Length: 70
Image (cartoon, rainbow, N blue to C red):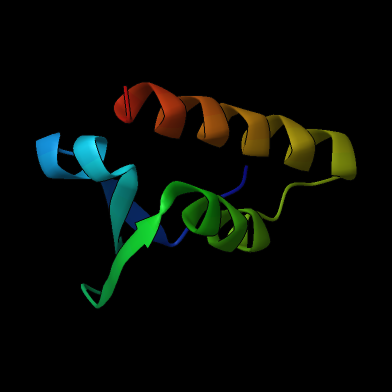
């Protein structure tokens, strides 16, 4: 099982600006990033048991962020 050490928040402001607010598990505010930059950051953090699992997790994350930005 993989874990990502950040949490994401997407509210109305983030939806309107196509950004996402990211906070680390220890509460550090990592700022608000454009969706593509956030996807890249989080993709680097995902460590699956193999490349297929990693690709699947990245795709799930991308879809979740896209839905949140609608």
